[in-house]
Image (cartoon, rainbow, N blue to C red; front, side, top):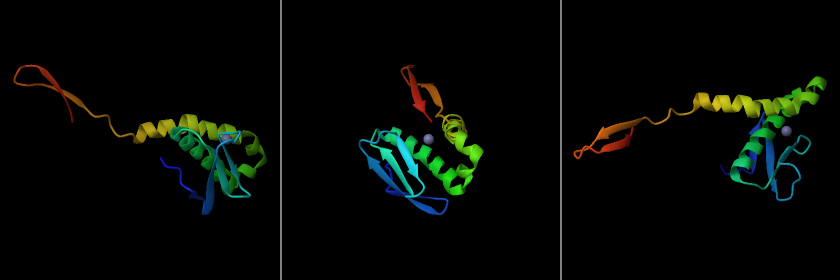
Length: 114
Ligand SMILES: [Zn+2]
């Protein structure tokens, strides 16, 4: 996935900036409406963007400002990231291709993919 220059979330445009030497994997800043990502492999940047978009959703949606939630926001994001999304991706995953074994004229098995 190519990291877009901005995203829209909760009716807000959020700029995405990539920095080479960012100390963290990523940051979301509500005041600037900006997600900053550390330059890294595409898969890492994609998962970090999703992580920061969850922080953005909690902040823009207001729940991040609720006192009890502030202390557990990172845990909530990581729970969704590590538990919910992998489970969801298994639900919506395309079924694996079925492998069918047939024989050709020389009686050698041929593996075909349907
Ligand atoms: Zn986080």
